Length: 239
View 1 (cartoon, rainbow, N blue to C red):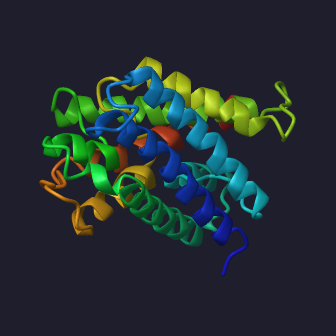
View 2 (cartoon, one colour):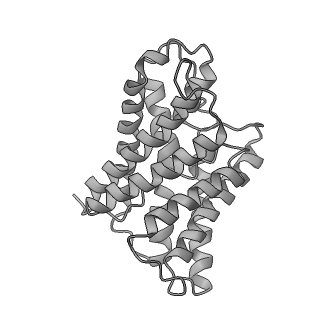
């Protein structure tokens, strides 16, 4: 088992527990946070990233929590040794985190009539469905995440290691409030596909379909954007 596998798994599970958890709190019927809005969701995801990275790093992992990050760094550095175990850990962790969210809100699924809201707890969907435009949005979101991450780690910025998770959380918050409207800003294939699979297999009361027709967009888009971002960062001397 590669060093960092358990950390990536635990960190991604934490990411989803807090991230999908805030969506559940806002969307599911009779929750005390119901209808608290987009700012609550985007803030919750920022905190989710912070908590997930802290757990992963504490457990000896780099805290990628995201196949797009793992693939982008492998492409930019040429080191592919941890790609398979890290991505496997991220998807497993995302699936486990989604199960925990389902259990934490167990009494609220049956109270929620809208099947789309139940699905939205687990994965993203577009505000206006146009696969080409949706893909572009996710590419831009993935690019923004990795390009700013490269800046955070650059010699010019020289961010102290203990501050990096906090700043990355703020970057994710910024992406949410600035770019999240069109697609719900997956910017992470594991964050979207792992819980989508959980939605498909869990006995969620009154659920509908898992929207597999859209599922490729939040997987492909962030990977393309992330790789382009780090290759550009490398070419311009940011890393």
